[in-house]
Length: 462
Ligand code: ADP
Ligand code: MG
Image 1 (cartoon, rainbow, N blue to C red):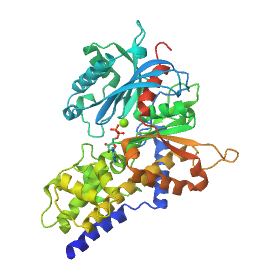
Image 2 (cartoon, helix red, strand yellow):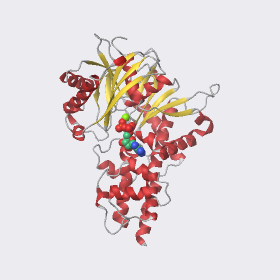
Image 3 (cartoon, protein in one colour):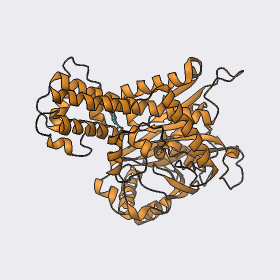
Image 4 (cartoon, helix red, strand yellow):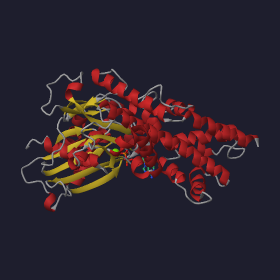
C-alpha cells in the first residue's frame, strides 16, 4: 500500500543521510585533528575545549595507601575506597547511589549535600585493613565528568552542564570548593587531592596496569576522550613545562561538530528541544543518552506521516526519551526468528499491542542505522587522536609499538553490535597492519581507580 511505500521512503532517506563511508569518516577524523590543534592553540579557539588536566604524571605503580574516590557524572554516583600497593591486587570497596532526578536540576548546595551525606555514610563503614591510620587525614580523588576549567590538580570551575544536568548556580563555581563546603556541613574531614574528569581517571587507571595506554574514551551516557599530549605542543599552556614533558588533555570531544558529520532532521530537532541546544552535537549522535531517542523520533515520523502503526499515532511514542538505549539494544540484538523481543519491547514500552514481522524488521533496521553511524563516528574520533599524536601508521623500526585506548562506559560495554561495528570501522580506517597495533581495552570503572591513584600521587603525605 501507499502507507508502506511511504514508510520505506522515510527509512531510506534516513539511511542515506546517516551513511558513513570510509571517505566520510576520514573527513571527520581530519576535522577532529584540526580542531584539536585549534583548541590547544588558544582558549576559545575551537568547539573542542582541549582542557588542561594538570595531570603531568600518570601512575607508576609505586602508589600506596588507602584512598577514596568519588565519581559523579551520570545517573549514578559511586563512592570507592581502594588500598594501593600491589599493582596486581588492588583491594576495592564501593557503593553506587542513584541521584534523585530533582537534584539534577535543583541547586548546587542540595546536590553536594546529598553527595557529602552519602560519602560520610560510606566512610563510616571503614573496617579491617581498609582503615586509615589514626592521625592521618582521609584523601579523595574526585571524578567529575562535566567540562571543568581547571586551575590546579585540585581545583577548577564548571564550564557547563551536560547529559541532563542543569543546576544553574553551579556554573562558574569551583567544584572542589562546593564539595568541601558540603563535606564541612556534613561533619566530614577529608582532603580533596585531585579533581579529574572521568576520561582522565580512566586514562590514569588504564596506564597503571598497561604502559601502552595513550588515550581514554568514554562511551556511556555521554561521550568524551582524553589523551597524553606533549607539553610543548600546547601553545595555550602558560606555565612551566612539566618535567615529564607531558600533559593529559581532556578533549571534551562531545562538543565536537563539523560540517562533515552526517546529521539528519531528527538530530536537529532532538538538539533544538534539548536542555543544551547547539552544544554537544557529537555526543548527541553517538552516546547512550541519545541513541534510543533518535530511534523514537524516526519511528514517530513513520507513525505520523505513513501511519506505520495504524491510523492513530501511539501516544507513548510521542514521549521524549521513553525509548532508552538499552531497550533499543535489546531489540537490535533480537535473534528470535519472529523478533519476539522487538514485539515485547513495543508492547511494554510504547503500548503497541500488535506488530507484523515486516514492521519489526524495519524497526531493527532503524536501530542498526542509528547504532552503526554512532559506532563508526566514534572510530573516526579515535583516528583523529591517533593522527594528532602520530600513531595512525606503523613506524619503521617500531613495527610492534602498541597503542592502547582505555575504554569505559555502558554503551561500549553492553551494546555488542555497536562495539563490533566500531572495531570494524577502526580496522577499515587503519588498514590491516596498523590496526594490529591498536588495542581498545575495556577498563571497567577505571576512572574510580584512576582518581584514587591521582589522589595518592598528589597526597599531602606523598
Ligand atoms: P555513565 O556514563 O552515566 O557514567 P555508564 O558508563 O554505566 O554510566 O553508562 C550508562 C549508559 O550506558 C546508559 O545511559 C545507557 O545509555 C548505556 N547502556 C547501559 N546498558 C546498556 C545496554 N544494555 N545496551 C546499550 N546501552 C546501554
Ligand atoms: Mg561514568
